[in-house]
Length: 382
Image 1 (cartoon, rainbow, N blue to C red):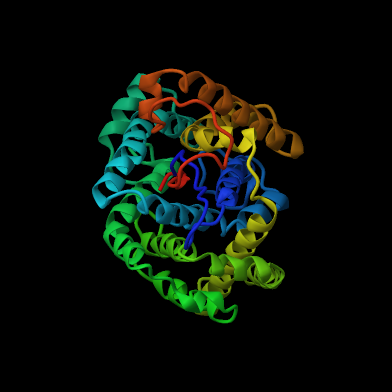
Image 2: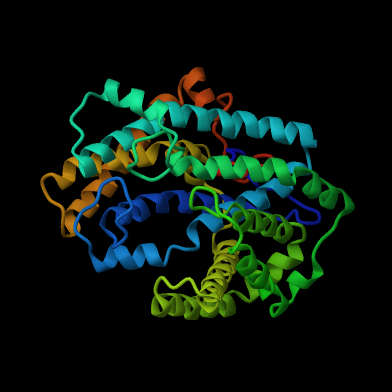
């Protein structure tokens, strides 16, 4: 993600892009209900766990579009960024905006999550200092409560940097040639990416995540951004894509957690059409600028980096008193959001803390739509 807005004014692939900022920021806000649901869903693999409930389980099952959306928006933002940047500048910006926060996060932000997980799941009673020695010397697993060093939720930042760096030259070549995929302007053909997405899902994973699939969503976001006529079609056909997405969601629920080829294809169809529907409705209704979205453009990435530590810590203490029902869900979500926002308000005021969170120099506030092209789902972070 980057903090710069993705708004441009004219030219090929250069229509107003405020909706990219809106979608990204709404996606970051969705982290709080989503990761709170992870505390109460049927999957046992999370740092702290309460009593399972159907709402949280279904919410997590139907959130397959969430991380693909952030990669897609990062790819779209990268198209606009590369119109004004060389490959070297693009990569160097991502070093400061992605790798520096990643290093800071792994060293400072993530360890408390593993500490609380060990206390919750394994009854660890040692000191935090003693835990840190274990954390920084155990490289055995990236699982939520193994207790060793891990990027945790910052895997997204790592993947985004690797994908951006690996694809910068192909993206730059396509941008300079003025290439645009004409087939994406036709609704039936716009569904073709489902096939390669399904095929890529069978490639090896890294830490339980498939970087090839996310790279494909990133590149699809780039391609969609190359010509406004593609988004014209997506906006015009948004009801169709929404209907397909709803049918796909029903299929995902019916098939449960099956890993068969048909189930994978249904999930990928549901995800891709959901993303197209979001782009279409976003472009139609979320293309205005406001002070709120301008504020969120900068806040989004720090909130992403910080949120899960506050959520896990809050969850640990709340679950000791109540682990079922809507109240602990609401308390965990609300308190973690408030703590994340308060922390952002503190750290954004100093140069060093801005640097370690990838914010760059402090700039005067501006209404979304008045900025330069270039952000990425900072996540956007491209």
